[in-house]
Image: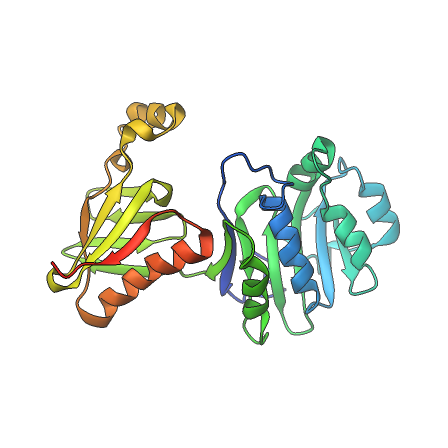
Length: 282
Protein backbone atom coordinates (compact mmCIF):
# COMPACT_ATOMS: atom_id res chain seq x y z
CA UNK A 1 0.00 0.00 0.00
CA UNK A 2 1.21 3.49 -0.82
CA UNK A 3 -0.05 6.95 -0.09
CA UNK A 4 -0.30 9.69 -2.71
CA UNK A 5 2.86 11.64 -3.43
CA UNK A 6 1.34 14.74 -1.85
CA UNK A 7 0.90 13.03 1.50
CA UNK A 8 3.63 11.11 3.35
CA UNK A 9 6.36 8.87 1.99
CA UNK A 10 7.54 7.68 5.43
CA UNK A 11 8.35 3.97 5.36
CA UNK A 12 6.74 1.60 7.92
CA UNK A 13 8.79 0.44 10.89
CA UNK A 14 6.69 -2.61 11.86
CA UNK A 15 3.86 -4.83 10.66
CA UNK A 16 1.01 -6.65 12.36
CA UNK A 17 0.96 -10.37 11.53
CA UNK A 18 -1.50 -13.14 12.40
CA UNK A 19 -1.12 -16.87 11.83
CA UNK A 20 -4.03 -18.81 10.36
CA UNK A 21 -4.67 -21.06 13.33
CA UNK A 22 -6.68 -24.21 12.69
CA UNK A 23 -10.41 -23.78 13.29
CA UNK A 24 -10.16 -20.03 14.03
CA UNK A 25 -12.51 -17.69 12.16
CA UNK A 26 -11.74 -14.04 11.41
CA UNK A 27 -14.27 -12.84 13.98
CA UNK A 28 -13.05 -15.20 16.74
CA UNK A 29 -10.94 -13.90 19.62
CA UNK A 30 -7.74 -15.03 17.87
CA UNK A 31 -8.99 -14.26 14.35
CA UNK A 32 -7.40 -11.79 11.98
CA UNK A 33 -10.19 -9.20 12.01
CA UNK A 34 -10.62 -9.20 15.79
CA UNK A 35 -6.88 -8.89 16.34
CA UNK A 36 -6.55 -6.01 13.89
CA UNK A 37 -9.47 -4.22 15.54
CA UNK A 38 -7.75 -4.54 18.92
CA UNK A 39 -4.57 -3.03 17.51
CA UNK A 40 -6.46 -0.23 15.76
CA UNK A 41 -8.25 0.62 19.02
CA UNK A 42 -4.87 0.97 20.75
CA UNK A 43 -3.47 3.10 17.94
CA UNK A 44 -6.46 5.43 17.82
CA UNK A 45 -5.43 6.53 21.33
CA UNK A 46 -2.40 8.13 19.64
CA UNK A 47 -4.19 9.32 16.48
CA UNK A 48 -6.07 12.48 15.62
CA UNK A 49 -7.66 11.48 12.30
CA UNK A 50 -8.81 8.32 10.53
CA UNK A 51 -9.22 7.96 6.76
CA UNK A 52 -11.53 5.24 5.39
CA UNK A 53 -11.96 4.12 1.81
CA UNK A 54 -15.37 2.47 1.33
CA UNK A 55 -17.11 0.83 -1.60
CA UNK A 56 -20.74 2.02 -2.05
CA UNK A 57 -21.78 -1.64 -1.62
CA UNK A 58 -20.71 -1.48 2.04
CA UNK A 59 -23.69 -1.87 4.37
CA UNK A 60 -22.84 1.30 6.29
CA UNK A 61 -21.85 3.41 3.30
CA UNK A 62 -24.83 5.75 3.56
CA UNK A 63 -24.28 6.21 7.30
CA UNK A 64 -20.62 7.03 6.78
CA UNK A 65 -21.49 9.33 3.88
CA UNK A 66 -23.97 11.17 6.10
CA UNK A 67 -21.87 11.36 9.28
CA UNK A 68 -18.33 11.91 7.95
CA UNK A 69 -16.67 14.33 5.56
CA UNK A 70 -15.88 12.96 2.11
CA UNK A 71 -12.35 13.90 1.14
CA UNK A 72 -12.06 15.79 -2.17
CA UNK A 73 -9.85 14.22 -4.82
CA UNK A 74 -7.13 16.82 -4.30
CA UNK A 75 -6.88 15.90 -0.59
CA UNK A 76 -7.11 12.09 -0.84
CA UNK A 77 -4.26 10.19 0.75
CA UNK A 78 -5.04 6.81 -0.88
CA UNK A 79 -3.94 6.28 -4.48
CA UNK A 80 -6.95 5.75 -6.76
CA UNK A 81 -9.47 6.32 -3.97
CA UNK A 82 -13.06 6.84 -5.18
CA UNK A 83 -14.89 7.27 -1.88
CA UNK A 84 -12.55 8.38 0.89
CA UNK A 85 -13.88 9.72 4.19
CA UNK A 86 -12.24 11.53 7.09
CA UNK A 87 -13.10 10.85 10.74
CA UNK A 88 -11.89 12.97 13.65
CA UNK A 89 -10.68 11.43 16.92
CA UNK A 90 -12.04 11.03 19.48
CA UNK A 91 -15.32 12.54 18.18
CA UNK A 92 -15.99 9.85 15.54
CA UNK A 93 -14.44 6.93 17.43
CA UNK A 94 -17.70 5.02 17.90
CA UNK A 95 -18.62 5.24 14.21
CA UNK A 96 -15.17 4.03 13.14
CA UNK A 97 -15.42 1.06 15.50
CA UNK A 98 -18.88 0.18 14.19
CA UNK A 99 -17.53 0.04 10.62
CA UNK A 100 -14.66 -2.18 11.75
CA UNK A 101 -16.70 -4.58 13.87
CA UNK A 102 -17.74 -8.04 12.68
CA UNK A 103 -20.25 -9.71 15.08
CA UNK A 104 -19.78 -13.45 15.53
CA UNK A 105 -20.78 -15.30 12.39
CA UNK A 106 -22.25 -12.26 10.62
CA UNK A 107 -21.17 -13.07 7.07
CA UNK A 108 -22.61 -9.85 5.62
CA UNK A 109 -20.54 -7.74 8.03
CA UNK A 110 -17.53 -9.97 7.28
CA UNK A 111 -17.95 -9.34 3.54
CA UNK A 112 -18.23 -5.60 4.17
CA UNK A 113 -15.14 -5.59 6.40
CA UNK A 114 -12.89 -7.53 4.03
CA UNK A 115 -14.08 -6.65 0.54
CA UNK A 116 -16.06 -3.39 0.62
CA UNK A 117 -13.77 -1.68 3.12
CA UNK A 118 -10.98 -0.79 0.71
CA UNK A 119 -8.40 1.13 2.75
CA UNK A 120 -7.86 2.40 6.27
CA UNK A 121 -5.34 4.68 7.97
CA UNK A 122 -4.78 6.24 11.39
CA UNK A 123 -2.97 9.59 11.26
CA UNK A 124 -1.41 11.88 13.83
CA UNK A 125 -0.59 15.57 13.54
CA UNK A 126 2.95 14.61 12.48
CA UNK A 127 2.57 11.59 10.18
CA UNK A 128 0.68 8.38 9.54
CA UNK A 129 0.61 5.77 12.29
CA UNK A 130 -1.21 2.75 10.80
CA UNK A 131 -2.40 1.74 7.34
CA UNK A 132 -4.24 -1.33 6.14
CA UNK A 133 -5.90 -2.92 3.13
CA UNK A 134 -8.48 -5.16 4.87
CA UNK A 135 -8.65 -7.87 2.18
CA UNK A 136 -4.84 -8.05 2.01
CA UNK A 137 -3.77 -9.45 5.39
CA UNK A 138 -0.09 -8.80 4.65
CA UNK A 139 -0.70 -5.03 4.42
CA UNK A 140 -1.04 -4.06 8.07
CA UNK A 141 1.72 -1.54 8.49
CA UNK A 142 2.80 0.60 11.45
CA UNK A 143 4.94 3.73 11.52
CA UNK A 144 6.18 3.90 15.10
CA UNK A 145 8.83 6.55 14.42
CA UNK A 146 8.38 9.47 16.77
CA UNK A 147 5.60 7.75 18.69
CA UNK A 148 7.14 6.71 21.98
CA UNK A 149 5.58 3.69 23.65
CA UNK A 150 3.47 2.56 20.68
CA UNK A 151 5.20 -0.77 20.06
CA UNK A 152 5.41 -1.51 23.78
CA UNK A 153 1.66 -0.90 24.08
CA UNK A 154 0.91 -3.23 21.15
CA UNK A 155 3.24 -5.89 22.53
CA UNK A 156 1.36 -5.73 25.83
CA UNK A 157 -1.96 -6.18 24.03
CA UNK A 158 -0.76 -9.05 21.85
CA UNK A 159 1.16 -10.93 24.55
CA UNK A 160 -2.18 -12.49 25.50
CA UNK A 161 -3.20 -13.25 21.89
CA UNK A 162 -1.80 -16.52 20.56
CA UNK A 163 -0.67 -16.39 16.95
CA UNK A 164 -0.39 -12.61 16.51
CA UNK A 165 2.47 -10.15 16.96
CA UNK A 166 4.03 -6.90 15.82
CA UNK A 167 7.38 -7.50 14.13
CA UNK A 168 10.01 -5.27 12.46
CA UNK A 169 9.02 -4.42 8.89
CA UNK A 170 12.50 -5.27 7.59
CA UNK A 171 12.25 -8.82 8.92
CA UNK A 172 13.94 -10.68 11.74
CA UNK A 173 17.18 -12.00 10.27
CA UNK A 174 18.97 -12.10 6.92
CA UNK A 175 22.34 -13.60 6.05
CA UNK A 176 24.33 -14.76 3.02
CA UNK A 177 26.56 -17.84 3.01
CA UNK A 178 28.40 -19.21 -0.05
CA UNK A 179 26.20 -17.36 -2.50
CA UNK A 180 22.89 -18.30 -0.88
CA UNK A 181 20.85 -15.68 0.94
CA UNK A 182 18.52 -16.68 3.76
CA UNK A 183 15.72 -14.49 5.12
CA UNK A 184 13.88 -15.48 8.27
CA UNK A 185 10.41 -14.03 7.85
CA UNK A 186 7.56 -14.22 10.35
CA UNK A 187 6.02 -17.25 8.61
CA UNK A 188 8.82 -18.84 6.58
CA UNK A 189 12.51 -19.35 5.95
CA UNK A 190 13.24 -18.02 2.46
CA UNK A 191 16.39 -18.96 0.52
CA UNK A 192 17.63 -17.73 -2.84
CA UNK A 193 20.67 -17.94 -5.08
CA UNK A 194 21.38 -17.24 -8.75
CA UNK A 195 19.50 -20.32 -9.95
CA UNK A 196 16.46 -20.77 -7.69
CA UNK A 197 14.53 -19.66 -4.65
CA UNK A 198 12.28 -21.41 -2.17
CA UNK A 199 10.15 -20.63 0.86
CA UNK A 200 9.81 -23.07 3.76
CA UNK A 201 6.73 -22.70 5.96
CA UNK A 202 7.55 -22.39 9.67
CA UNK A 203 4.35 -24.28 10.48
CA UNK A 204 6.25 -27.39 9.32
CA UNK A 205 9.20 -26.84 11.66
CA UNK A 206 9.56 -29.16 14.65
CA UNK A 207 12.96 -28.24 16.08
CA UNK A 208 15.80 -25.74 15.62
CA UNK A 209 19.18 -26.77 17.01
CA UNK A 210 22.18 -24.45 16.81
CA UNK A 211 25.64 -25.97 16.58
CA UNK A 212 27.80 -22.87 16.93
CA UNK A 213 31.08 -24.82 16.88
CA UNK A 214 30.33 -25.74 13.25
CA UNK A 215 28.38 -22.58 12.33
CA UNK A 216 25.26 -24.61 11.55
CA UNK A 217 21.59 -24.64 12.44
CA UNK A 218 19.95 -28.07 12.21
CA UNK A 219 16.29 -27.96 11.19
CA UNK A 220 13.83 -30.79 11.80
CA UNK A 221 10.72 -30.48 9.62
CA UNK A 222 7.44 -32.37 9.49
CA UNK A 223 7.40 -34.85 6.58
CA UNK A 224 5.43 -34.06 3.43
CA UNK A 225 3.02 -36.88 4.30
CA UNK A 226 1.73 -34.82 7.25
CA UNK A 227 0.83 -31.85 5.07
CA UNK A 228 -2.67 -31.19 3.74
CA UNK A 229 -3.80 -32.79 0.50
CA UNK A 230 -4.23 -29.36 -1.05
CA UNK A 231 -0.67 -28.29 -0.28
CA UNK A 232 0.79 -31.59 -1.49
CA UNK A 233 -1.18 -31.30 -4.74
CA UNK A 234 0.11 -27.77 -5.36
CA UNK A 235 3.68 -28.86 -4.77
CA UNK A 236 3.31 -31.83 -7.10
CA UNK A 237 1.84 -29.70 -9.89
CA UNK A 238 4.37 -26.90 -9.54
CA UNK A 239 7.36 -29.10 -8.76
CA UNK A 240 8.11 -26.67 -5.97
CA UNK A 241 11.53 -26.48 -4.32
CA UNK A 242 9.61 -25.73 -1.13
CA UNK A 243 8.56 -29.38 -0.87
CA UNK A 244 11.90 -30.42 0.63
CA UNK A 245 13.22 -28.05 3.31
CA UNK A 246 16.95 -28.12 4.14
CA UNK A 247 17.95 -30.28 7.13
CA UNK A 248 20.57 -27.70 8.03
CA UNK A 249 21.78 -24.25 7.01
CA UNK A 250 25.06 -22.48 7.58
CA UNK A 251 25.10 -19.37 9.75
CA UNK A 252 27.69 -16.65 10.40
CA UNK A 253 30.19 -16.95 13.20
CA UNK A 254 29.92 -15.36 16.61
CA UNK A 255 27.31 -12.81 17.57
CA UNK A 256 25.67 -12.72 14.12
CA UNK A 257 24.93 -16.45 14.35
CA UNK A 258 23.56 -16.07 17.86
CA UNK A 259 21.17 -13.35 16.61
CA UNK A 260 19.71 -15.80 14.09
CA UNK A 261 18.94 -18.35 16.79
CA UNK A 262 17.46 -15.59 18.91
CA UNK A 263 15.19 -14.62 15.99
CA UNK A 264 13.85 -18.19 15.78
CA UNK A 265 13.24 -18.04 19.54
CA UNK A 266 11.44 -14.67 19.30
CA UNK A 267 9.10 -15.97 16.60
CA UNK A 268 8.29 -19.02 18.71
CA UNK A 269 7.51 -16.88 21.74
CA UNK A 270 5.60 -14.10 19.98
CA UNK A 271 3.58 -16.19 17.53
CA UNK A 272 3.18 -19.45 19.43
CA UNK A 273 4.92 -21.76 16.97
CA UNK A 274 5.32 -25.29 18.30
CA UNK A 275 8.94 -25.92 17.31
CA UNK A 276 11.65 -26.21 19.98
CA UNK A 277 14.82 -24.09 20.00
CA UNK A 278 18.00 -25.59 21.42
CA UNK A 279 21.79 -25.19 21.43
CA UNK A 280 23.93 -28.30 21.04
CA UNK A 281 27.52 -28.72 22.22
CA UNK A 282 28.16 -31.74 19.93
